[in-house]
Figure 1 (cartoon, rainbow, N blue to C red):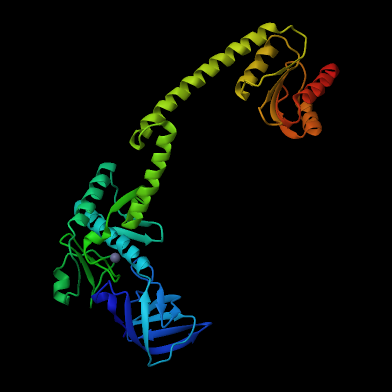
Figure 2 (cartoon, helix red, strand yellow):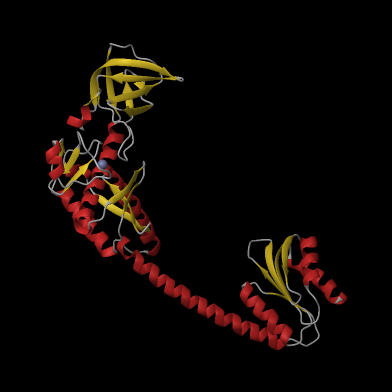
Length: 387
Ligand SMILES: [Zn+2]
């Protein structure tokens, strides 16, 4: 049986131990010690990283009462070795995991929902609950979770006897018996868990719910704790500062500035639509029936160009083409319509001679070509003469 040093003290970073077994496994070695501070993967928490006997630990596995350290090289059985866990990685994992316990305990106490799924990776932690939560409840839970953190309550590890365990109201994903490890977070939560946790709730630092989705009839919450919450705040604050600088307002006034800009944009769109309609009307008024027309209109978009083509055709124009050049680009769009001839072959001719693509109905085609607008006009003229 391997003695788990983190059971007694989750803050042990360095330790000495005796090698009790070393077995080759593929190109690596499985090393068992009499005691270890390395936590093997479990309860949603990743296995510890670090160094053992001067080698990088590739993985940590738990089988029964034994913990195996996977190393690139062997260690002599009977020798004393030094181990050091990657403390930054472990502490980050403990912050997230203890934060998850605090929140799950509160959700259970307030709503009676169970934590039915817990996943933790290097950037995010998700918790699944078997019931829905409103935005107000989420805000309340987040505030209460941070209150537990501020109060810096002790985190204790308990091994209750069989009888006491029966009486204890603890959270657990499955029915447990025998020697059960209970993690007590202050006075607010009791949960069966095998992982190392922070010593006081204050070490969690902060808890932020960054996402909440309805999931399988319940909720999936994404949380960030400790340094991850601060990092997220820093990124978002920087983003708001930069946006604020662009709008010449303070970070907290960015939303207002964006709303104002959206309103102005809407007004501009309405004005452009009115001007486009006036332009279409003016162009249509100039049309002499029976004369094919090719107009170059850089101020119009494709919707207005279609309107213009329809207006020209209605006025009796046998073949109406509108070219939409884009400033600084050889690429431009076209809309061509006719009430008299099938314009589809024209799309093919334009694509073949100018490159690009287009198509549509017998009455109207639309597409994109490259080159000078004059080239397209020449092709169209030739077509007009033939039409
Ligand atoms: Zn746990």
